[in-house]
Length: 330
Image (tube, rainbow, N blue to C red; front, side, top):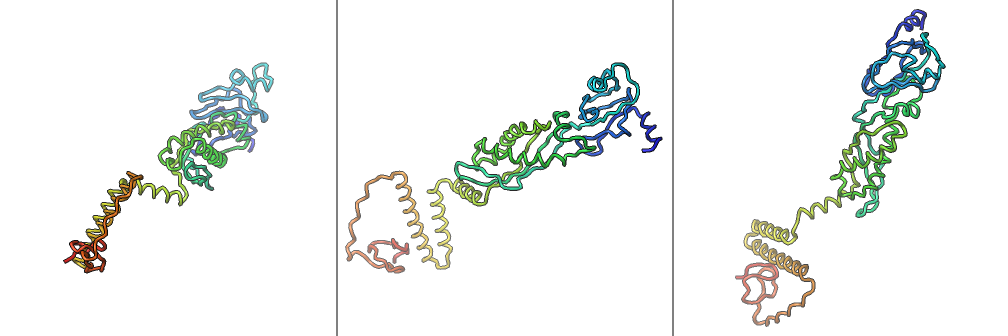
């Protein structure tokens, strides 16, 4: 920087920063030789914190407001410089502006499946994704532990580390919450809040705060999803006896519409009768598992029988329908 630019810098007495981008977390105020005039006006806007650094050592911290830099409002820097009396000459110090606003709509996701132990399905692998929001809660800690002394820092410099911590913390949160795999979809909000509490403690040593953690989706393995679909189908069917009756009625309707006419109708009645008997027998077995066997019916004498005209089975002579195929007898 030339002589005139350096000279102009001596007359600039306003120190401020307006962020041109939404993802800038830290900005170092540029001044030739880092020379600042005593009595300069420091403006710190809302969602900002200004920190003065002298020879690599953090000094005074300024919250939002307007300040006139003097030995009275810079007690730490005054002590470091050993200014026992008023000092009006320019002094060297670095000024860092920390952006303390919330950084919203940060995306996270599991690059690899997360292992989970489920009481019903055993070990399963989950994939999940969502969004989160964070902010700088302790500017001094953040400047020491994360930022360092570079000129500019954006969210890209920390989101990679935060995402890895989120995925690791989410697996711990799922395990500790003990929510069954079948109930995960119905507990996204509760699980997200639980994970947020767990992850907030992990970010505190970095001077960061997790303001929000949202789970948009948790996908289960294909075989687990198939098992869930089968269980859902069983729930939709409800009463198996009623479902069997419905199936029998459908079979009768289809048989009646068959091109074989009366033979199809008779077969349909026979099938319906057989299904109905099987249904009743199954219901009786489930309701009364221990029953004495019914006495056997006496065998029909051969002289009182005839052969079915459709299937040839031996049936009672007085029967109007075949007990084997259901065909109507003439």
